[in-house]
Image (tube, rainbow, N blue to C red; front, top):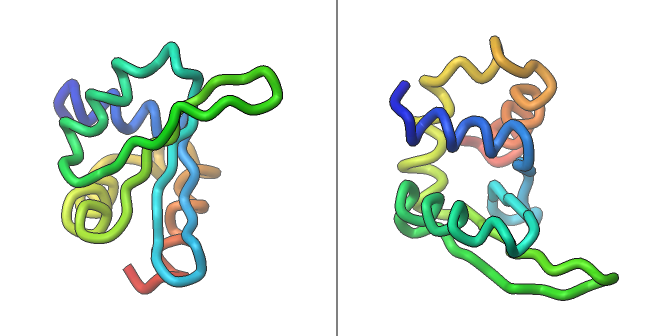
Length: 105
C-alpha cells in the first residue's frame, strides 16, 4: 500500500459511507469545508469522482465527495478489494461488502 492508498483508506474508514441510491452504488465522504484541500486530493487519486458543495445547513458548512459509476467500479472497488479493509475495521468492511452485494459489484 502506498501513501495515497493509505490516506484514502483512512478517510473512507473514518468518514466514508458505502451505499447507493437504489439504482447505482456510491461511496460518499462528507466533511467540513476546512478539509477542501483533502477533497482535492481525493479527486486527484480517483479521477472521475465528484465534489459537491459547499453546503450550509444548521450552522455547518460541508463538502461532499462522491465516487460512483466507472470511477467506483474501475478504480475504487479494485483498490479496496486488495487493501486489508477487513483486518483494519470489520464494521466498515461489512458496510462495503453489503454495498457490493446489493449492487452486484
